[in-house]
Length: 323
Image (cartoon, rainbow, N blue to C red; front, side, top):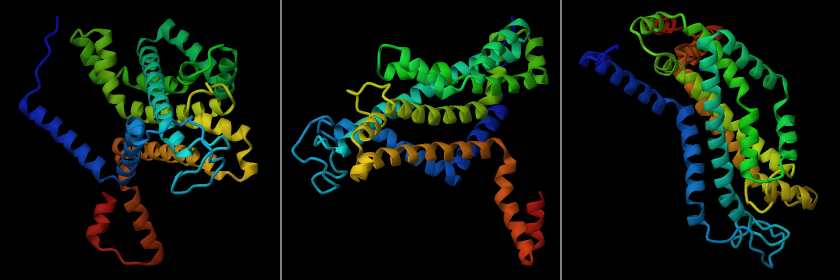
């Protein structure tokens, strides 16, 4: 039985210093900072929605199809429902669905990709066959077909459909990365120490793919939010549930565009666009953390621009940019 070695103070200090350096870079990166601020705003909106809005988003009133005003900040629907209340309350389901389904889909992708890439053989062939089948099938049309044939309509159905149809691409990418790592020296050393397959896969290989998994998680969350809104817009959701997707559904059925009721469908659309942009910004920031070459790219672009304009550069700056 192998005995785990405790990290020395020097190694522990190095790891702590690396973690502090990454955290400082995250705080200094504008993309990550802006993205996290927007995501935090929407998460707080989803958590504190019932506290902020005491009005029932499905309550009817006599103010029919009113534009934004002091009484109704985002106007009303043809039934007199407050659009602001629907946007705030609907954020909970849309954001919750996106992050939960994205996390479940990413876990499936990680498990399938790691096990398939490390074990190889018949298990790899079986997992690769299933993955290739889901890769060939168009994701959104497959989700539409599955959602149409399931009797129960609601967030749970859409979540299961998105989890079933959205894991294949990430599993293929993680499998490829695992194939390149399973013969590395640190993996061979772990085998020599007698570590189990489970520990090698999830404690030796997996930590080296954290940046890839984080990028996949953010991309999957974006896909789940957009797909959930799309499926509900097509009528595969529960019309009694208030979410950004059902707002699109009722706005389309109520001819909001023909009536000029832009306040009915534009607010949820802006919310989805902002949330998707924030997740993309964080994704770009993670890429810069994982790939140091991307951090020097803006400086190199400035250097090339100065050279093209004939602006003289100091030797010190030239040496730093060359490094």
